[in-house]
Amino acid sequence: MSSGVPPYIVWKSEYSVREPTLDAQHQEIFQIINTLYGQIRSGVTDEEFYELVEKAKGFADRHFRTEERVMYDCGFPELDNHERAHRRYVEKVVALTPTKPRDSDERAYDLLSFLKQWWKNHVKRMDQKYVSYLQHLHHPVKAVGGDD
Image (cartoon, rainbow, N blue to C red; front, side):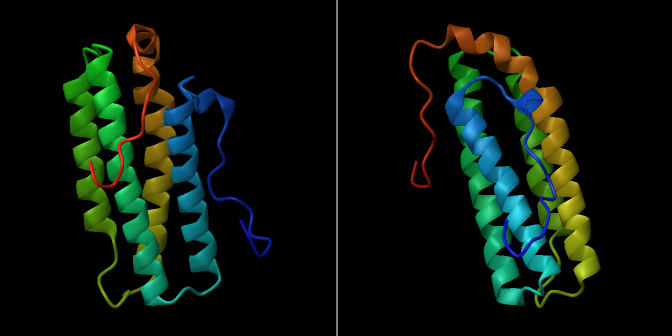
């Protein structure tokens, strides 16, 4: 992060799912949240705010598609529950995103608080459940692109 703002969410080794592509995606999501936090603290414009929120939503969507494909490929039995958690996340982000023009920084901070808690808890608890199934993959994990 820039401008001396401490990170809002910090990656820890305990969040690792021990798969480089998925870990890199999780770390990128943490960085996007930190960037959003830093921009809100420094007085981001509405346009910059919504651009970054859309980037976060798009990246999360690509990550979810990558992760769900990996869970399918490795035979993870809780895939349906995981997909539901991803869908609830998307619904909550939409509900918490301040209206245009941004109505208040308070709502922006509510969104940030949700993002921080959801990602920390999801990666640390739900994602850890599929780690042992990753050994059943017979191919390297490839990130789903924006065009897939």
